[in-house]
Structures are given as structure tokens and as C-alpha cells.
Length: 232
Image (tube, rainbow, N blue to C red):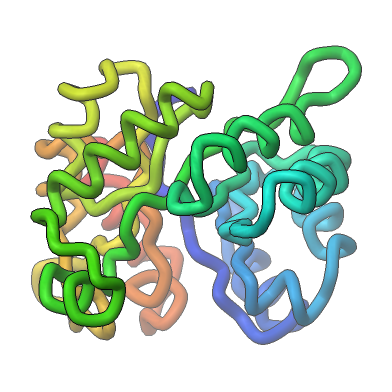
């Protein structure tokens, strides 16, 4: 899969989502469907967006006991999305079970990636709230290596960590990176952020961009700007 911009469709429902997607007359953006939209509309909206020709990153961040995650992933595999994810903190056993559940009888499956640390988490909150006292880069690298050992295809991480993940896990190990904002934009609740151009230079394979595109006065122009800055 080539590098690309994934648009986070973090909308409250189908009407807003399709109004946004219908504004694109030339492109079929790679889209992320997260918890808000999935919980509001269910798997039907995944099927509809897929039928419209979009690639889909289903961002549900599963995290439970291995057997539960395995069964959940077997259900998600039937939706024919392109990428699924889970939390690396769920342990190697959980990730291995997820991979087993996601794999269809014919051996095919979506890509499976693991969230290392959310881009809203910084060193202070990780230590104070999670009682993890190692440096955040060290924690991310450990989670990435564990995900690779479990057989996953990549991780969700900050663009600031993408190059280090590739050094630790190989160039083919995907880095899907949220926390991307335009230089003249608002960071919102993100703490570890870069611009699209910086993410490219740092080694991100995919960037996930939501509000800078979806909340823009001209979302199509914002998307095209993001693609140009990221893909060069």
C-alpha cells in the first residue's frame, strides 16, 4: 500500500458523513471510521462507504481479553475494511488472538495495527495517570516491537516516533500517524503534533487528519493541500 492521507470522518451520523464525502467529485479519499460514527450507525455505514469505493481504516481500538478480541475481530473481518486496530497495551497474547480472529478462511485479512500511545498522551500524563515511568519514546518502541513480534503489520504512533519505529521494526512495518495539523492551524487536544510535510520527512506511511480537513471552510481544498504537503 502506497503512502496516503486518511481522512478521519469523526461525524455524529450518516447524514453529515455522506454530505462530506459527496463534496468530493474527483477523489475517493481513504477514510477513517472511528467509534463515534460506528456506534451511531453500526456496520451498515461501513458497507455503504466501502460500496462507494473508499478504502477504510476502522478505528475501534479493541482492548479486552484475548478470546473476546478474537471473536470481535472475526466479525469485523466480514466488513471488508482495509485496516483495523487495537491497543498494544492489551498484551502480545491479545494481539495474536486478534490476528487469528481477523484472518478469513481463505487466508486473507485486513491490515492490523496497534495503538502505542495516544497522541493526546505526553510524558507527564503517562507517568501521572498510567504510572508508566519510562521515557515515552522507549514505551512506544517497546509496544511497536511487541506488535511486530505478534505478527501485526504496523502501529499507530505520533509522526515524531515514525522514523524510530522503522529503525526498530523495519521499513515495511507501517506507521499510521494521527496528530497532524497545518502549520497555521489549531492543535486542539493533540500534544505530540507535526505538519503533513514534517510527517513525510519523519517517515510516516499514512497520516490521519480530521478536523483540519472536515471542519475547514473548504474541505476539498484542505484535503488537497494536505495531500500535496504530505506526498510532495
